[in-house]
Length: 166
Image 1: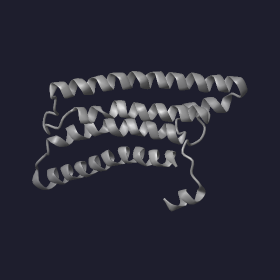
Image 2: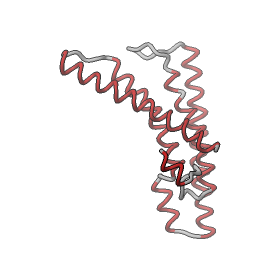
Image 3: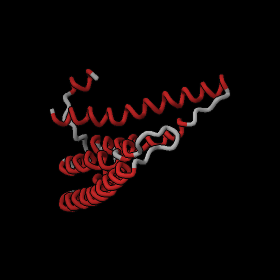
């Protein structure tokens, strides 16, 4: 149950920025085509929301067992080598995510302290930077789950009836 709720939050944190980018890009194209007017904020918004999409997309990939490099490695080896490889991959990913968490949080705090805002929209920059530490926390959790399952299957427990309802 906890895994399903977390999956919904992860999906929303990836889907909402994606939907906003799609709508903004469409409005900008229409604006340029019909009114010969380009909306300056669209590029800025798209780039900043891409951070959320990439971070949460990586987390979803960990959750779904979709990182091909891990799957290929695990198909080639068995036994103790496979276990050691799983542990090594998990430790490497977690170390990377801890570094990302540390520096992402530090950057967000510095942006809050300085009052830094995006140039054209004047939205606080830390709202976008928070994707780094938040994505890292989700990623650490999903990496631990994926390591327990051997990086080969989804880490969200679903029943066939639940999948059919979606």
